[in-house]
Length: 129
Length: 387
Ligand SMILES: [Zn+2]
Image (cartoon, rainbow over all chains, first blue to last red; front, top):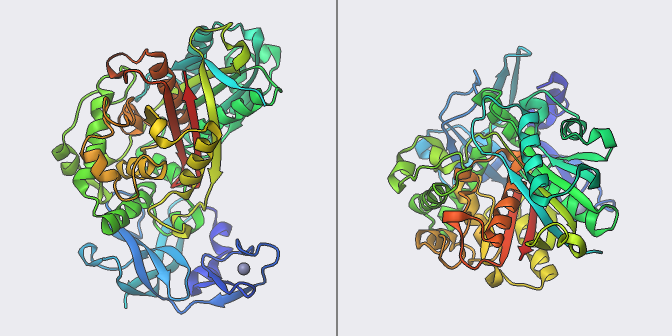
């Protein structure tokens, strides 16, 4: 992955910064500059999420391309933030402990290491709340 | 708009075709279709080629020119176009060909699909397939393509009580069907235990819940229905051709256990054809994973939401049962060369409706449906075909 591609969204990844449409009062994470409900009538502002939510569904990944920062098996889930939006993230817990409905909160962690570019990249993961 | 029919079909064997190149396989499929239709090269007006990722699989772009050139049609300078929608690229190619003929812009058009996946290693293939999902907000977060369908499966089990045995029943049925298909990548049956004892890829999906990595190509020739009989005694009529989009990321779907792109494409297709799910005699659906077939048979409307697993376990989707699904073996056992899959589905249904499917023939099949999905449902394409 090109370095610029990751760094462009760095603030959003590090601090869980998404967007909010004040026209329809909908929150977006990942951030969107165009509200899918209001489109050009939407008014978009940045917002920082509290980082608390619940696991909607999850899987334990046993086979993945080599990544020095993450060893298999690891837990990947869809988390619904308390403000409404859903996102895909790793859940830092024992594979057997993950469950649908588990309360979680965000933490700052190493996401991966790109051998091609020598880059280590960080972002948000979730742990049990 | 003109009615459109398929007048010729061709498909290579599916598998790890080490000794054949990308250009070898699409020419092989294309020539079969052209000979089947009995058309002359000079009669062909255009080519649409479905392909997901030749740029990364074989480091070749500009496939449209390559296809025209090696099919021997660059000498007459016909328009050739590559279309891409991840695993739905083939379905899109067929739809583009149908639109071109229906509009009156072209008469005889080749719709092809091809993918050469085994020239790179498994890690690279896994990474290319992950590009069918949202790279920035799924892939970077650690999602693999199987893990996305695994999260759908987990929630489907949680909400509807679907079991790992019911998922495995999809694989068992499709491997059995593929044992009667000489083109299939896997021609030996598997048991429920084989599936459940295969290694976990992304819990609850095992290795045998996943479609394989495959090389292959397929092609069909479409023409205005009014002249189809000049070429074949058994034209296959296209009653509906629909395509829809949805969010690229699974986490943004309204209901994670429903592919709304499939629901809308199916509704539109049934309205266009003035048919209902009960009128369909045979279906080829997009079973990239076992859970995907269960979603498909629910979202198309063959079974109620949540009942697809039980229906499969009860044998309702076997050849000879209520609605035979994936008689070819599906993506699961016939193989899934991503860009070729949508066209291969059309070849299978055309063979079935012609009564030429041999041991896996669904007796008396007159109306068939094909369903092709891109990614986790960001694109869906449905065609309804009839004798
Ligand atoms: Zn809005």
